[in-house]
Image (cartoon, rainbow, N blue to C red; front, side):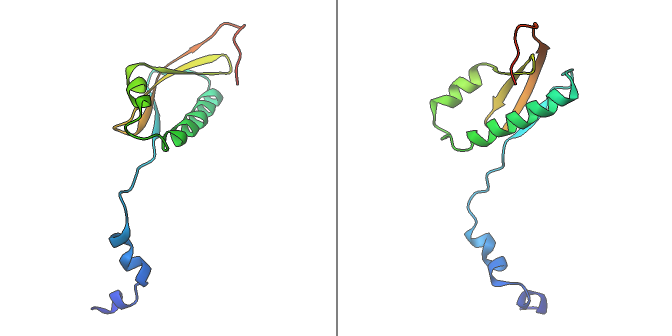
Length: 108
């Protein structure tokens, strides 16, 4: 062993041997043509990241995934509706549309 290997902490050297499959967290992306106020985009990002974190605990064989792949989901914030798709295989959420709702619909 070279000198640099001797100075490496044992836990660090063994880490690759005991690592399980690394699960990449979901990422959130907005389609280029999404045009909503910046503060709402930031809030939508925060909520979608929370949704993404909760999806981590759903089994890959759950019926949830077939439903999630069949249609867009919706998120209503501050008088806007954001439509998004969940791409489980790519581990990403893509916001595909945003539109302002009428004055009678408000949600935060």
